[in-house]
Amino acid sequence: MASITKQIADTVTSVGVHAAYGDPVDLDGTTIVPVAIVSYGFGAGEGVEGENGEPATGGGGGGFACPTGAYVTRDGYTRFEPNTIALLTVGIPFVWVAGRSIARLIRAFKR
Image (cartoon, rainbow, N blue to C red):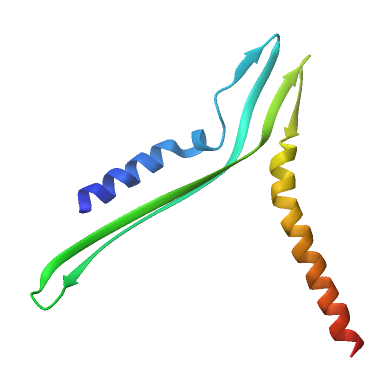
C-alpha cells in the first residue's frame, strides 16, 4: 500500500503548474494560454477488520478543475480574458448567499 501512495504522490508532484496552465496555442498570430483552478486530494489507510484480525486497506482520491479563462497575447499585449460562464456559475450562488445573509443581518438588527 505504501508504494501505491508514493506513486500517486510522485505523479501529483510532477504535475505541478501544468495542471493549472495549459500549453500555449497559436492561432493567426494570437497566443492563448488556458488557465484553470485545479484541486485534488488523495487518502489511504489500513487497519484491522472484523473479529478475525484480518488486515484491511483502502484508499481513494478525487479532483476538480474549473476553467477560469485564458491569457491572450495579441499585437504584443497580453491580457487575461475570463471565462464568463465559469464566473456566472460561481458568482450567482455567491450573490444569492450574500443577499440572504445581508437580509438576515438587517432583520436581526431591527429587532
